[in-house]
Image (cartoon, rainbow, N blue to C red; front, side, top):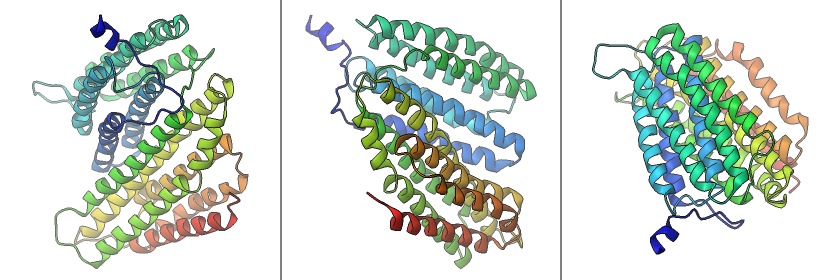
Length: 391
């Protein structure tokens, strides 16, 4: 009898905080995201960028599902740790095959099929834990059944695309995501589910973002390779680090604390808190994560070029676009996040416009000059926001 009692789900309370087990889960997820940097850097082009974005959408949606689940019941009690550990193993396997996600060879394992099955396992385990969490809650059980329908339907194009490969794989995997995500939005149209702990929900998103910042910095540093470093490479690394610190400040000092207060102030069962959690956190944090990965990809390419003896005279279109465009995407996500929570002023869009206008200029500049310009612009944004803060 006591064993059965221990297996029951333990619901989250308002004062709940993120656990070390959840942080461990986030680390594995971010490892998969940072593998996308190497995947896109291998043959950077519009198609590769789109494929990388598609995989990012997959993994972000999967992580968001577990983040919402972890706000319903404790992730470190009952059967939840076992299910999440199995999901972590599947994410780790998926991360290992990401660089070959669109390649076919004569080996025993097909990378696309391995990735598809691993993702299927991750989503299937989430559904299993949803049904476990819905014990004694008919409304949550109905929502779990709605989720199960669209998720299972998405598995068909997912597996067929992996088997066909090439262009069909890209098209069908896009369809699979749209069915899975679209079905999930329909399933939650009546109610996103109670946000039991606003502080926990905000903390989980902040933790995953800071892990992405840290891991992306390490991944970007791999662009320097193992060759002896000289002063241009070291200076570029310092400039990239400076820009990363600015990105950290703009979220964790210049936005997140005030936004978290707005989320926690809303009533746990109110539509207002549900909408904030869904839009300001689940949706608005996606462009921030995507922007950090794009920024890290740009730094990776720049360091790789600087470490090469045949260095290019100017930055070029590809590095300039992913570097400046990534920072612009991050700032856009931050603007949406703050607009939805603390009602920030539209003047924060100015820096985004400037970044996009500078892309054609940056691609003609020497690498260090373009990176220094970006770091200086971000530092100026930080200084401006420090001077104009009202809290």
